[in-house]
Amino acid sequence: MSDEESEYAPSTSHLLVETKGPWSGPGCAGFLRDARDLARTGHRVRLLFIQDGVSAAVTGSLGETASAAAAGCEIWVDRFSLAQRGLDESGLLPDARPVEMPEVAACVLEPDVRVVWH
Image (tube, rainbow, N blue to C red; front, side):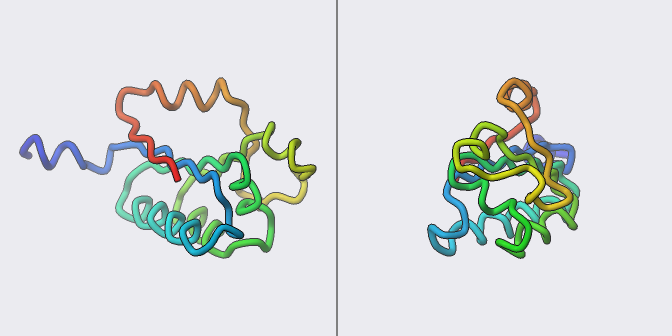
């Protein structure tokens, strides 16, 4: 395997950070479809919803989030952003997991992780 091939091997881990949410336009849905496609090709994908992006993890808000979870993406939701918006954890998709920033920081510092911010 060449260096270029190994650079994109399925062992690559991705942390995709969504900050805007479904109400900002079609960009959020497209970003989540990209996450789904990465997971389908064997990559580890963690979707982190922060700021207004947390609304995309609420049950019934955006089908692409559920589709990404079904493809194997881990759905992380910033607990602080939820509280700021008056959202309750019980309203999240079943696959969504509230997280704190120390866990996110540990993920960012993993040697094989690629972070993409939207």
